[in-house]
Length: 73
Image (cartoon, rainbow, N blue to C red; front, side):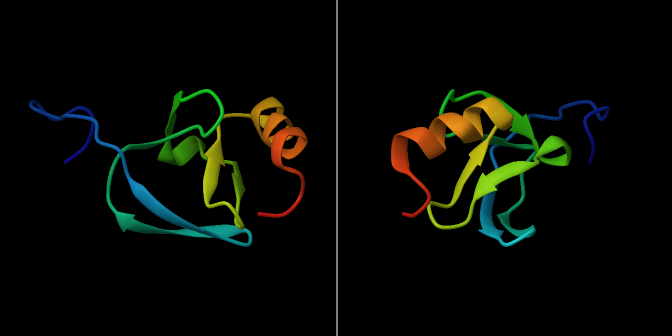
């Protein structure tokens, strides 16, 4: 099933973030940005934090998380 199929309903994926990669634990079409709450399509996922297991929509959100929490968990 893909986004062009009739009846497709976007769902939130559950992902385990690794260094430079991730593992999809529960399939879905997007994850949520930990800072803005904005949905991020899986194929556009670029920024995340391994220690906090969070995804970020863009570099600005990743930087905001770094300023808020620092480098570690």
